[in-house]
Image 1 (cartoon, rainbow, N blue to C red):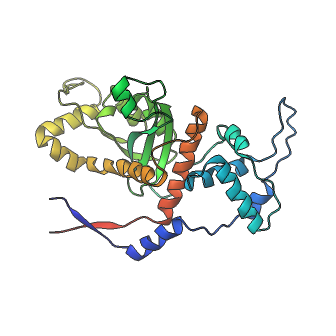
Image 2: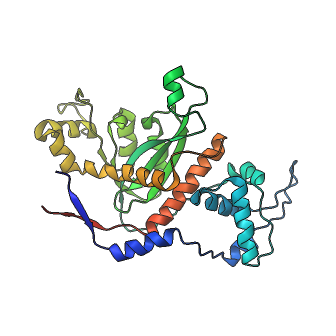
Image 3: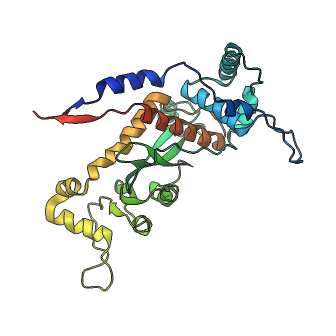
Length: 311
């Protein structure tokens, strides 16, 4: 029987959910002061008029409310008019041209102690004809997607690191990039069987963290106990599985907490959809990072505190 859950902080969570889509607009004076920049770089080409902060602000508004380029421009112009702000607004072509050059930081609430990181990846669709055409007529060059590799804090659900690649990258190839992007100390990394590679274990061990990755069904011991040197994490997991069973190992190791990453991806696609509007890879990567930065803000505003109801 599927377990049932209740929410302890329902009133706070309910208020936070409403606040996520609040249309109250508040802009800091520092943002307005930095909106326009004077480009004295002397480099060839058109000079920059708008700061990166201005472009990032508009791109975030565009992502959160799923606006097209011209719609977002008109929305910001109307906001400035209502607030009596005498500033120019970047047009949609300027936003598209500058988007891929932005540096996006994921907002994370600092906490004490090391974190348990759950790692996974998901695909996000880019422009194309959908699923029916490839099934009927074979592979289409216009059907593709981007892979988003995430490192999520098991305790808070916040995204600690995100790496965007094309769909021809294996999950394990990007693990080290995800771990290197996490500044906080790590005490455990949980991932699915796609990361069951020797270099993945080595990369996690280099961070001084416990490795929780289920070995393959036909897995063999890599380093037997009669050999000199430290026992390998994978071999210890495999011995525990042989002794207690795969289900028992998952419960003892906390492997089921890896579902936090899947919950984060479900939350992302529910709020922002499963498609990208940008056409260039750099723009697509920044668009995804902006959405995940916004998702962190939303989690910080409203996150349910649930508990399992005993039958």
